[in-house]
Image (tube, rainbow, N blue to C red; front, side):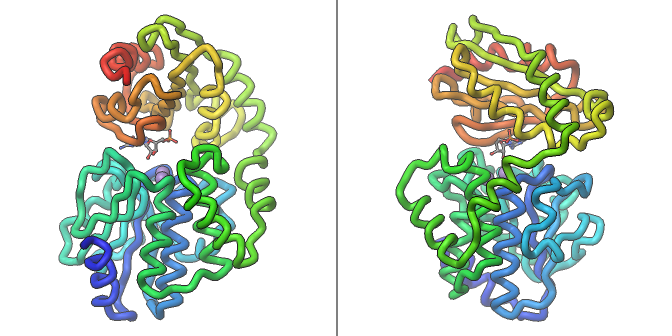
Length: 328
Ligand code: 5GP
Ligand code: MN
Ligand code: MN
């Protein structure tokens, strides 16, 4: 059993050994929250040399900079070179590890906690539950099996992760999600304050930028076998004009996916000149995870993404035929 193997891997690690935790590039609330919550749990177990990181630019979205355990977060260039244990969070495939993929080739066991249906099965021990709404659900279960009791700091991290990946509990599929939320809230954390900080606070420039990006959205009613697609894009020039960081674009998929006339929503976000991070959402007619996998990415049936090159309309032309190919 994978749970037993994961528990054994942690128990076999001396508390003064180096433990490296890793989440995916361009980290979101689930990636950072599950990783830092788990790191704090390891600290409670007595581990003293903990480091948490992610590949690529060290650009932590503003709302997550006050997460408990943020002191453990370091740029990938400062990650351990030969840790005794590696724990990976919310990473569906090796490409989302960037340069930290090197950790898979070391001597240390690699425990992967994830919930993507498209998970490629990398690592030594895989705790991959596609039925889990967030990686933090998997993280909480492993912490419980290790005998870690939830405290308010761990709970805040896991709650941020849960709230992020469930769209503030809109995408919940079972009572167990609210049962977990209840256990987290029982530690004394404040869900209202957390929600305001994470979802309802943004710089003025980010709001103005959102206005422009949403204003240029295109409705394509014939796409996806007539179920419709709505798409928009944002460039690095847009970001510069409003003096914003790329992560402020990540929440724009939410208003776009709400368009009644389209089943599929797409936001094409320029990360570096000519390199685009693409967010895909479906209301059910299309398996966007299959579309993303076909284009080198991954995700879930109703929420997925990939990296693309070219112009926004070229990216859309790549997606369009695949929507018809992956109609549910
Ligand atoms: P988002 O659109 O919020 O960035 O991502 C939606 C889902 O797709 C998340 O589960 C995320 O992990 C996945 N995803 C986004 N971009 C990529 C990518 O480039 N590669 C892979 N494998 N998954 C991605
Ligand atoms: Mn994620
Ligand atoms: Mn996740």
